[in-house]
Image (cartoon, rainbow, N blue to C red; front, side, top):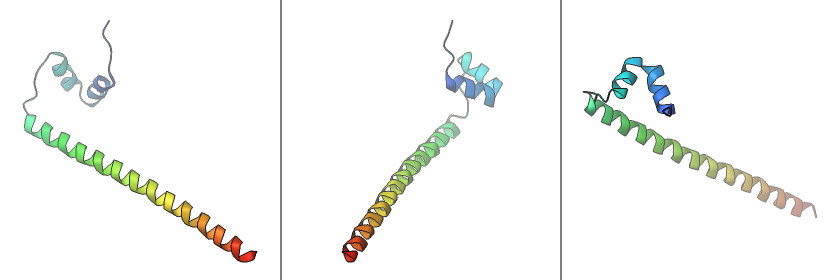
Length: 78
């Protein structure tokens, strides 16, 4: 019994013929387009990771500002 991978399921659901070709060991003729698509996906992944990091930094700075404001206001009351 062979293992069914998630990528196989995705390929099958997207295009049954592409999955069948892959199972038979056929190499797609559009290698240049596939390489370009892979490059675009890698760039998109880097941008998503970068924006997630920026969002985390922004939340951290916002919470720090709120804490410092609370400390400042409580020190003015005493």
